[in-house]
Length: 378
Image (cartoon, rainbow, N blue to C red; front, top):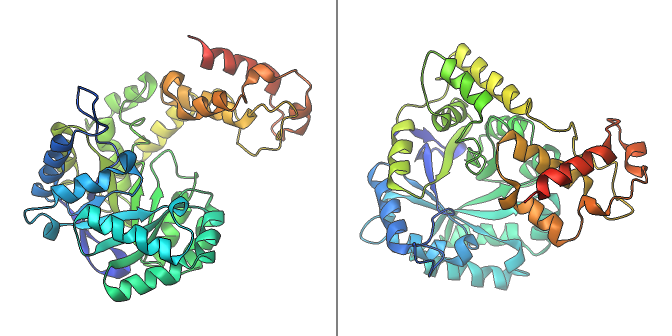
């Protein structure tokens, strides 16, 4: 296992961090998580050298912290650092923050949390956290020893990430990043900004929820043609670990074989390891994915609001993503939300207001109907 110095903190961490959000349930379906299997997977990772455990209050119907706490008995707690998260939705003042933190400590069976994150914030959530005194609460808990580091995980555009990162004395941040998201959310600019400030960066969604683990045919052809043979998973993780600003890459595993494969991969990666030819390969892979784009919608939302309630950019985003990653719309959460909120393209009357407003001059009306037919086909 390769270890990395976590920026200004100066502490060492395994490059592979175990994400505790994706454990599955038993075959019987009686519970959301197969507890004994999850405990075995966690200990297997730790025995292999993993030192960073990532969970959250809300994961797996609020059971993830409980199972992690059980897995860290018998001396395993002393071998790892724990990252968990405070969701804004669960707190409204410092008293409720204290109650939540104490609950998490009890579930995790520990007297301190190493990395405590304000969960999934953007600028709006950050302002709300500030309004209820979260930064001061975190500082107080650091003094009491209940947490070691004040952190946040982020979902939002780069401009908001830059604002939040500069607005507080943070110890660590967690961002979504992979070779397809270089210009999405915090992106490469956000990673490099944190690196310049000495703030360790933990990566989530390095495989885009598994979508980059199984390459479509045109992408796989590029991997197959390259002289060095690696799996799509290894290429994705290798690309991430090439960046010196990346401290930890999270990976959720459901099987022991996945743990073992990750241990092998993360024993071979370090900053600057990729050759110019390998970096060019990944640029080509990105372009191959993007060539599968259905429509050039940038999500600027100039077409919104639709007078008939159609979620135009949302539909196009689902359409593009299902095509890019060769996934079925049947299990797409965003499409499920669009249908539940009755924001589908079946409400389009062809008024043309969207096309008049679109800076890309896209054929929105025709494309919406095609997208909706493909996404809702049984």
